[in-house]
Length: 252
Ligand SMILES: NC(=O)c1ccc[n+]([C@@H]2O[C@H](COP(=O)([O-])OP(=O)(O)OC[C@H]3O[C@@H](n4cnc5c(N)ncnc54)[C@H](OP(=O)(O)O)[C@@H]3O)[C@@H](O)[C@H]2O)c1
Image 1: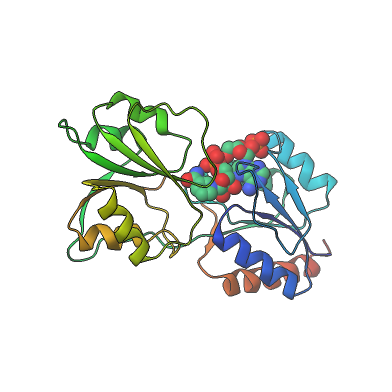
Image 2: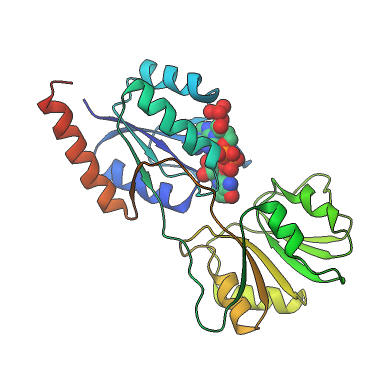
């Protein structure tokens, strides 16, 4: 019987959850538990890490999971690597629902960097006003450049921040061009640092930077092991139907 584990934490995962619920498929939605009030889902939910690859293998077996859909953020690399390893070990088919990367358009002033350290190094020496659109996990690395003012946009109010000079905008996407243009203008932003998340929910800041001709430090996606990847919810449903039929043929 089909019983899906959906690894979530993204807009795409919420769309996938809706499609699974509408299709009447048995599924569990998994959150890491990073935000205080995660978006409610139309599926049974579980919250918190599994305990690495061994924990995930045990969970797949205990919960009798037949298929895993990894709809985590493209930068949630540890979870995605664990899912590849655990699914291989437990022999559970895995597919990733992943949005295509953003590509620079005419008028964009992007500098590509491979990781967070590259983004820190790419900032100018002279004091600047930087929109640090990277979430909350890696802020401390930017303490190496304390001369800049940093604008942070976070889902939850932060506790102590590791940066000496920053302002905080509490907001949850999706964001739009008018709002992001107003934000960049109001905060007199001179540089944007972004992760290449792809998708539409967080793209407005790039269009706003283009409109204002601001430089963007674009952090490229981490490399992940080979796995089946689909860009659309409908394609994942199709993959699921095919994988379930294949398992039925093998008498699994
Ligand atoms: N990284 C980002 O930029 C970003 C942006 C937006 C949303 N998110 C979402 O935030 C969550 C955490 O991201 P991250 O970058 O911290 O992940 P990560 O570094 O890849 O994962 C670290 C650990 O968190 C646990 N974990 C992550 N996602 C989980 C999930 N959906 N269900 C259960 N456990 C999960 C796993 O713990 P165990 O090893 O104990 O299983 C994993 O090893 C993900 O769900 C992701 O989709 C991340």
